[in-house]
Length: 485
Image (cartoon, rainbow, N blue to C red):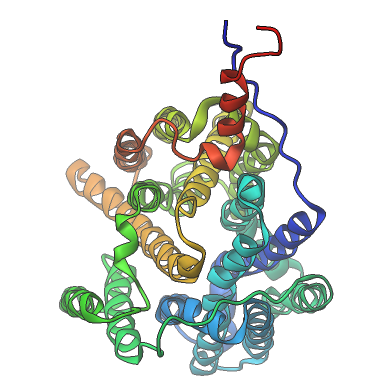
């Protein structure tokens, strides 16, 4: 009688573990900076003696710079080496942070944020590429778990840290805090990371960069300004329209180019195509949480920024618990089953936030956020790992560029979807200001958006990703007869 498969424990090499930690720290710095500034904007506006609403351009400038330069990251890493580019990205990001802290006007701050965005655009995809080229296939799940946490920790840690800094220190320290992290990261990369590179497949796709830059920048600018009153609605619609037109032009260009910066032929790879599509939908729904949850707690519940920050922090604790559990869960259930059922549970926990009320015990809210954070982190780890499971090594840099650009776009769409859902709920209810019921309706909408991603995993084979977790070898061992059988 054949034995039931018992997957072996996959040992992660010290080099892979060290590389994952170093890259994760750089990711955390970038994600923390992206959210910490939002809390400091009112204080910075007073220092610059301008309308706080105008400070939104400091956030938009960073996001646009990040988006514009992400597509070029893969080619640059192949040309100059992943370690060299990752190290340069940390330097640029840190110097941009110093410039932000020294800024004495909004235009100067915007220019500094653009420099920061250039560093961040190279840091995230190249850091992921560095880890993918270091880790063995069976180590990818554990390695990606490290990279998933910063993405989930940053949005929840940023607001309370930013509030603490602007309350007890100068707002400039929201940027200066990156200096020691950047220096330590630079030294660690230089000392412990190997330089791994692949020769570029073709000359640099300058036309593709220009087309993708206009497409992504205009589209994301339109999404960022939608419904916020920052610019006229006609400008918002025009930017979205221009972005879509240039996206179509880029699509036509990519079909003819030998090695486009954003290579959509990667979508033909079964694991990458399914993971990328489902990830976009899932991240869109989850991307609304950093916008909806703090606002619900502060506007709907009447809590302070510090109080809401301490509550939203619970989801990051769930992410921390997930890291050691991810590899065991994926090895036990497989990628396909995990992405289907864990995706459903993640959506349910997000919809459960719609039931939050001021009368709820704090422990109950913490529990929902803790479990939700665990499930979302496991889902992201599965997507981020499986996406690269069938990508050939020479195309790995192109895959990281496309995947990272998709993540950035989905997160921006998520904030817009959350804001739009809240606004529509408010209009239907006839309230001048959002109420708890309006927030509940918005959470249901984004939760259903997240739920749509789960069934997509049905399109992948049952055995998808088994070679990444050791399930494949376990099944092979189980099918072989014992001596004497």
